[in-house]
Amino acid sequence: MNTNPKPLGIKNYGSIPHLPGSRLGPGDHACHAGQAQIATAKARDRHDEIFVQEKLDGSNVGVARLGDWVYALTRAGYKATLSPYPQHHAFARWVGQNQARFLAVLTEGERLCGEWLMQAHGTAMRCSTNPSSRSI
Image (cartoon, rainbow, N blue to C red):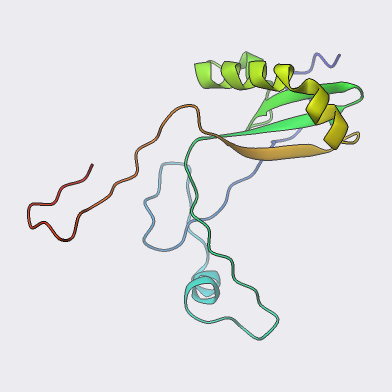
């Protein structure tokens, strides 16, 4: 068992830049204007494929396989069990309960990353048909 608090020795996941007009938090950054143009207005050529996805904001986590062990990781690459946040502890328990599944799909040194949506984050929605609309 790896006792290193950062089993991979690196961050588990980097940062995805936001498109212009997105709400930015303290650690967020926007993409270059040229990238935004390609993603939102006009592809460069017939070889560009543009995929639009909605990002749900949870807590970025990952599962890494090192040897015969799987590790639940925070975005920064630390073991989820060392996190001060309860949602990371719940994620670590879930990974432990599903260890056989992760061992079956991951080979040595591979990892899976995603959003753990245990803790709800609000999405502002406005009703345009009601003149007294408000965020919910």
